[in-house]
Image (tube, rainbow, N blue to C red; front, side, top):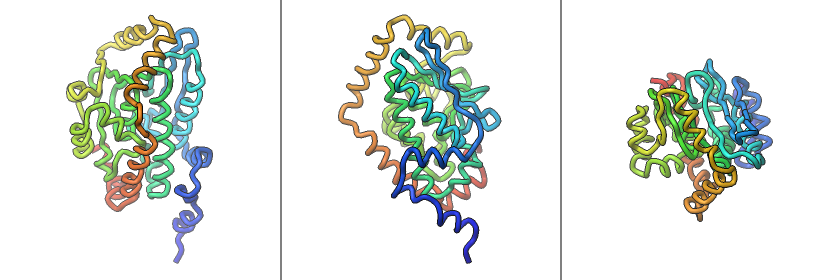
Length: 284
């Protein structure tokens, strides 16, 4: 007997065969909640991407994924920008995906779409000509840790905790972040952090090379940001371009993401994943 769920799934887009960014945005936009705001200081050439879904600890809805992509698109053509700060509204950075949204797409087909869309968005964020700085406070968990690690430089307020806790949900990182994690902390620690799915305190994260700057008072962070405004926009952008050309030369980022996608889609929607989501194990 056909159930309503099976009928709906039967009519669903086969994302592996017909994925496009526009189709993905149209689908994701249906899952409302929160917003991602882009704020730009034209005079200083400094922008902020603010993840704002405070009642869900800034967890991503589908709409927020679309908002983030739009913000990145805007910044790609911002010729006078030097710096973009990525931070959460309120008291947390980001705790991954909104649970209700994650439950609604808990199948390998939609997992393929989400992974490809967010993987592309975060790769483009990392490849912006602007220097990107993540401002971490509260928690960055799951996909939130992938957003945090994507940024060129990572700052943290005392008490910040970051966790690649995807394993608690029976899955691997789903937003294209595994290569970035390994690039940042090294192969051995990356495997350890992912396989144990533990939440890292700030000292552990600093020792691993995950955090570059720690502050107690937000004024210290503001002073740190000011250091990037002393030289010309061209010099700041040139510094990033030189390093990117050196480090990323010959790296096929899309191939890395495709390999990660195969692992992720094999786990997402499995019994282990669905059971873990039902128990909300990410936060336990």
